[in-house]
Amino acid sequence: MPNLSVNRITNANVYIDGIGLLGRAEEIEVAKPKHKMVDHKGLGMAGSAEFWAGVDKLEAKIKWASIYPEAEAVLNSPFQAHYFQVRSNLETYTSQGRTQEQPLVYLMTGIFKDAGAMTFKLHEGVDTTSLISVYHSELYIGGAQIFLFDVMANIYVVNGIDQLSNFRANLGG
Image 1 (cartoon, rainbow, N blue to C red):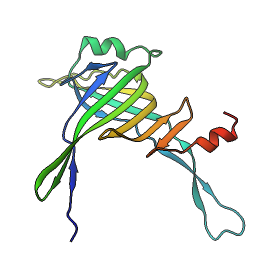
Image 2: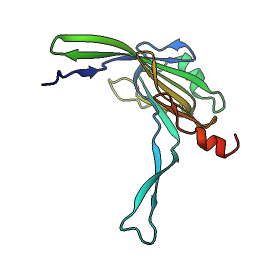
Image 3: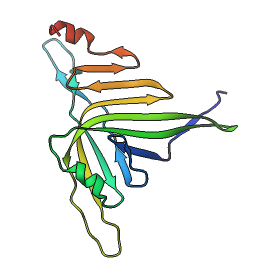
């Protein structure tokens, strides 16, 4: 019988332009490439199929634990790109307990497209969520790059394999 292992992530820290937001961001939804698929059907085919046609626009969300002036100062510029880093601890558990810990690092570059409206409620913290248009994203686990996507550079690397090298060559770039 194979030895079962379970990976767990239960916390993270968010950085914007190198400034740590420890305890300030309540939640973050990172941007991962979502593949656009298009239907293909043709005479003589018994059915239809879906084929890759690109990557949808990337978006991330940060839910804030409160209002912070230093964060508000960067949230409202529609032209200034920011560098985001999400760092976490990936724990692996087996029947022997926790057997491994690895850094999980997610990198993004993007622009705040919605600073987030504040919602005030009696006896509750202010709730606000910011939306980010993401142009570049990367995921590293244990120092190894899992993927890199950059829409402006037409780069999409998965597990070390450049998915768009022929595409770029065929376009002459």
